[in-house]
Length: 395
Image (cartoon, rainbow, N blue to C red):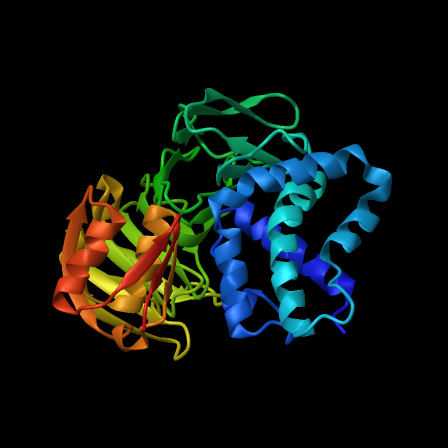
């Protein structure tokens, strides 16, 4: 029998991932009581914006009757006794529970100190900023204002889809750094100007952890998951280091792009200007051993094999996303779909597995997702169905 506590634990985890704009994979849905079909159902269900209103209504109701919370939740998800196909019904109901309860209740109750109260109605995935005390600030796109530290001191200026932390005459603070972590959901991009003047543009589905101020006694280090363009302010005395899930990239002053999404098997670094050195995460930087890139080169790190390869590239192919362009140059279809999901904030389930390894070259700007899929379909015919923000490519 499936334990109620396991479903609650899973609900907390998935709710946190959804509202932080993180992509949910099958491997994130733990437990042998979920089949692959049921996992796909859960993922599609959590991505359905039509469920948001119901989530908010239920969250508000639960908030009003907190003393009976657990009884309500348990009653809502317990399957009827003597029901045919017991396990199948249970997992379907569990999926509804995760979508309706977890986002509306667990996230607001436990994860947003100082944030919106349950029932206030977060109706889309927002850019969020985790502060040093662990609280989460939701960043409205049309909002301007100040970013303050725990003492009320202004540390950054918010202007729409950017935050500027830069201080004139920055010389490196000597106190211990405090970190902010920004999460960018699918369908959005964001720009940061760090305290040293370095500019970072974050692509959809990415996150960056960075100091509010850099200290003068250590490297300028930030932590990236996803894709970002860096224009690093030069400082020979204090190298800039980007840590990813596999490699570190160290620079003095340069412009480059890193693609390091969790679900991808490779980390790609493309250098536009200057020089960068790459070395494996967890190792100390050794200038004699670190791999170096020159402008116009791409380095690809294989996470599994732990090796690196280099090639000359057209750097414009890797920066087009900052101008709203989708560019695919000999890219497998399964990777194209992941990029389309991030760009359009949608869920695509491909049941036509013969398509996965087909390679395409194409460029789009301002096109609807239907037009893009139709364009690929003219070269390799396939059919698909659209239900809201969920697309299924048929076998």
